[in-house]
Length: 174
Image (cartoon, rainbow, N blue to C red):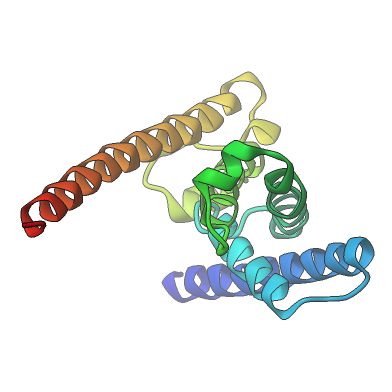
């Protein structure tokens, strides 16, 4: 049973990474007229980040949505928004990791199949919203609460690092 779980997670991770690579490359080609190796790699990373919370649920849908939404925010919206230009650098960490991870969590909350939940989770009767009616929405809330926790912890760590680095710089100047 454990071997099947690892194989299933590996196959779906490859499917999503490949699907997002194709979506990202197609969008690059359609909009800018040429594919980009940086875009293809960005797409693969985005797909792997998206599938991480899901461990294999709805792989192809998770390839399309997180392939197109982060592409749009990185390639179009960030060029128009002064705030996004200040927040993120050339690697697109916000789009590639934060946005894709949150999308992966939300899609997991929607598409988590009960049989797969029983295989991977110690919690019984766990399922996504599409498989459990009103009680399935709890999975989305758990994913959103987890995303809020990670964002808040990241903010605290960033403030701490900023404070420490400012103190180091003040101590080094004569």
